[in-house]
Length: 304
Image 1 (cartoon, helix red, strand yellow):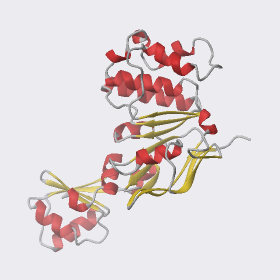
Image 2 (cartoon, one colour):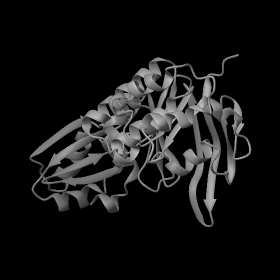
Image 3 (cartoon, helix red, strand yellow):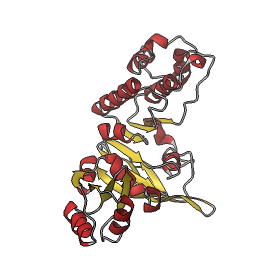
């Protein structure tokens, strides 16, 4: 019987003394999904991925891949998983092809020609015989991705896969992720590049201080969050005034304008005018993923 839930975490927690690096994370990723895992630095993303891959023992909770438990003592199911976490471990004095040949020894069932196929897929066929020590960071990331998909995994876990790449390389990796998903690979991608995530992901979860503060389809997150841009000469005074308006979730200053989240444009206008403040322009708009991310992960004290 085919398992439809590929990755699931239940009440996943990791404590380092008094620090709650991961604090009750519940995730469920379905077969064939591209799932985005977002959060600022220090939010617990990498620790969560470490527990998913059986590299870190949870303080509480559990991880299941393909319906089987995973821990540092239960790793058999990881044979179905490919991963690129951080900078790949490469042998610098060997070529790209030779590095892949080392990994290929772990998979004796690989078909002949698979290495050349992978080098072409990640755009390194012309650099196949160059020493890795001569590679740029972006090229090393491509080679790391090649290693992660060498054995045709059913689940691919990527942590900042476009790190160090130029816009063209980022586009190529984005297209590759889409192609892999079309071929049935389930992809779990952690990234701070919100535009990139928005282009490829079916669903996203946003992590803040070890906790998931939002999860859903990208379109659903767009639909539930709107922002109001207010142009007004006295931005500081207007911001202080709007903080008293119930429902406000975020206020950000953008030059001579304020970007207000959580309330409608009508509520903003009514509140300001009743306090003797007249805006010169008010524009209501749907939030992009970046605005939603900032709204969920930044406190007002940091925003103003």
